Length: 110
Image (cartoon, rainbow, N blue to C red; front, side):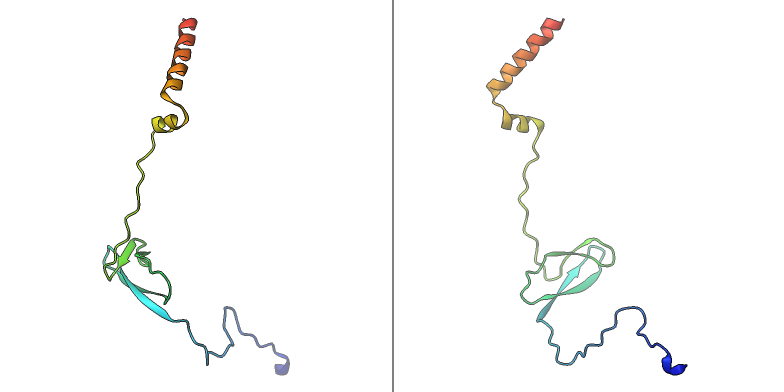
């Protein structure tokens, strides 16, 4: 009976590959500091463009690089108002004509 027993590996992922001769890609490690004073290091590929911010694995806040590199400021567009969007579609003359038509309709009803 013991000769017929099934032998398994169990659950989970276990590799049977031989790690000998495996050469890892060149890497560089970058350190980050979180606002809550957590310090951690993330490995990146040697040719990768390094980010200036990374989410802290302990608290989830955005951490900045320890070497002092600051993110480039993003170009901020001013918020568009209803008037701005209306002016994109219509000229002042068109708006004055529409206003005159609406006023005329309101005066007819009263």
